[in-house]
Amino acid sequence: MKAICVTRERKLEVRDVTFPEAPPPPGHVFIDIDSATITHGDKFFLTRPLPGGNALSSGGQDVYGANASGKVTAIGEGVPIRFLGKQVAIYKSLARSAGSIGVWSERAQLPYSTCLILPDEVRVRDYCGSFANILTVYAFLAEIRATGHKGVIVTAGTSATGLIAASLTQRFGVNAIFLVRSGKARERLIQHGVDHVLVTTEPQFDDKLSRLAAELEATAVFDGVGGELLTRTIPNLSVNSTIYVYGFLGSSHPASFSTMLLVGKNVTIRRFSNLESQTVIDPAQLTAATRAIEEFVHDPLFATNVGKEFQFDEIHDALSYETVPGRRAILVP
Image 1 (cartoon, rainbow, N blue to C red):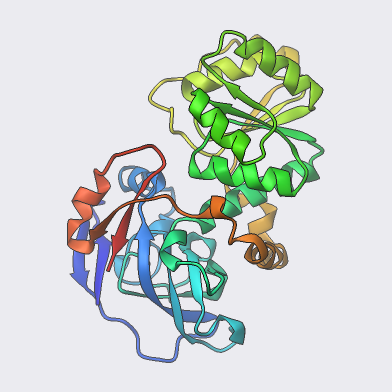
Image 2 (cartoon, rainbow, N blue to C red):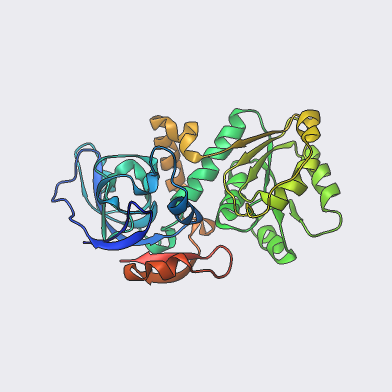
């Protein structure tokens, strides 16, 4: 089969790779891949591999990628029968396995725990980049509730993660303040039921953020941007706030702040990774989270924002694809 593989030099190339014969190993499934998405992380880790190996290329034959969707065609021993024949969203990084092959490939062999069953009525391609984002927000909200935070400041705006956060904070009754860069983005979130949306370019932004953060007890910051936005946000946080950094879209500009703010307000800055969360680490919690997400994954706000589709041999064009923020390059076998 055709697959996009990563070389020792961290380059990508299309190869013919051998796919195993049936049946899949215990705990694994065969999946016919419909489509795979390219994320900022996919590009980032090509030049900055993780210490100890990269989950995006773990498994057999160096097939790259972490997010995709397709249809389960066979199941191994121990896999619940409900997965057979179902269309699924895939987040490969959820489980490392020597038997993993895929997902930037025509077919994949993966642990079934990396799959989210999708409703029969949705278009599977619309969810090729969704599972990781949904689980990130779900795991984050579970963590802040467990640690006593009552509200959150979301810097992701109307990005894919931001829209998912808009849905889940309402679903779970979490006080939320969303930061956006334009009036158009503000109106979009308001149309989706978000009550508190602040435009960062407005003259009264700092005063409004400081007041709302105190009023809503929003002491958790869900930050996927960093840079200048974090610089503006930190002085307006309440005492005992924690900034959870999960992304780095604004990392080309450094964040700047006085350490007096950290001391005086007891502000904590820490990394957040869904793979390090209790939701993912604990198998029982991951199963419960996946089953819960299956119940509401049909929410239109969870769909992947498809930009342009590329064939495997167009991988280098796909990597350089840039368009309206939030739209994804999609790889199609």
